[in-house]
Image: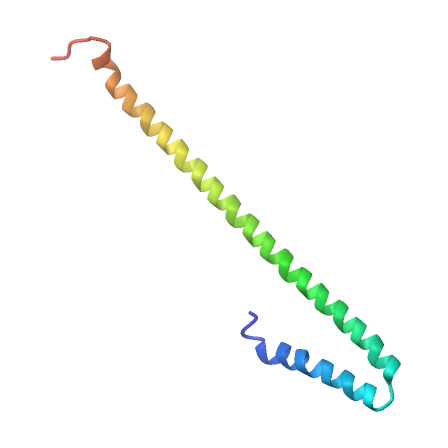
Length: 97
């Protein structure tokens, strides 16, 4: 999704500081300062969103992997129990003809 919206966010990322510089150059220093602080807060918020998304995806991946591992271990235990049941009559000393 980031690559599809590249022209939009790139223009905003480059254009916003340029617009703030233009505002300050024309005499609106207080407005440019206020907007720059809001711009920085927005960048921090976007960073927090990206980080929380990455953490959530990682958590889901680890959980999915752990569930797959548990299922594989359960299948392995079932196969071992089945193999032990097949070997059990021979170990008991019973004769089979």
